Length: 102
Image (cartoon, rainbow, N blue to C red; front, top):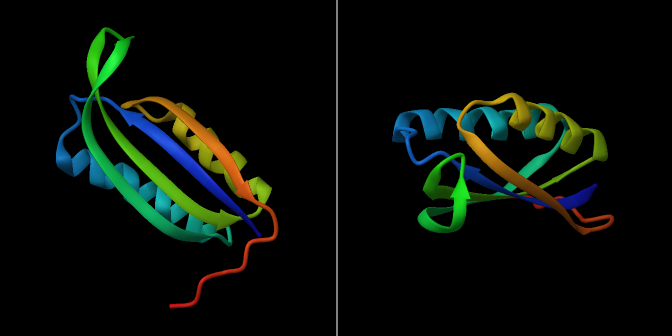
């Protein structure tokens, strides 16, 4: 399994319930795709350097997880079609990462 990090920029107009629901869906995809979620790091609302979809603020969340390559493709597919996610980036953090027990 490989270790990945996905940084998401959510719309500032999302309610806390909608944000939690979207994150639950994304973490569920990782679990169903034989992956393991390591960290869900909520950075909160931040000012943006330039407007994104006419917004100057956005809610950042960083996901760190283990999984196979097809899992990342499915996760990114769902992110692309989701309303409320402005931008995202996924980075491969390491090859042949060991699963974390606990």
